[in-house]
Image (cartoon, rainbow, N blue to C red; front, side, top):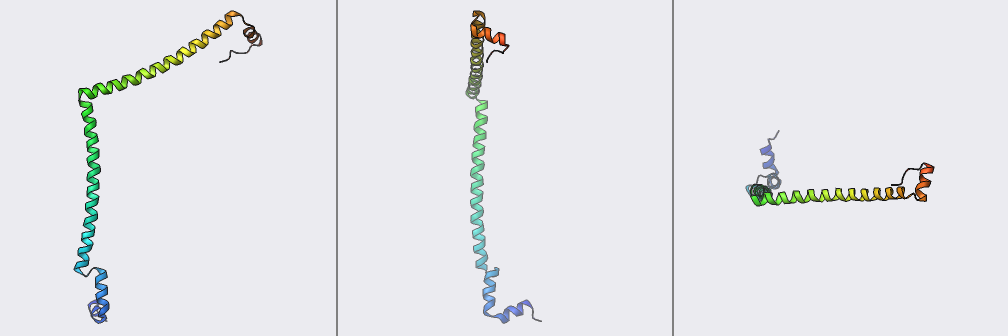
Length: 126
């Protein structure tokens, strides 16, 4: 039985083809390593870019929290939001009060529609 080395020697031309496809050629291995290094450096650059952007945003947020101007800006934004919510609640309350006043005026006036609703036992319309 032949060893692998004896088999390669007896194959002749085929051994050269086999050697180049299996990585026996040092030039082949160098090209593979160069391609891998190129891809790896591209990945490293993209990771560095993303990490730099995240770090900048974190630092900017921390700077805004620490500076007096940043605190004042945040206070103004929160105050404005609270004012808008209060105005909305007051607007709804004013509309309800106006509706209730109109109903009371109708009940007190003794209008025919109000009397009919009371006689039929229907609840007031919203």
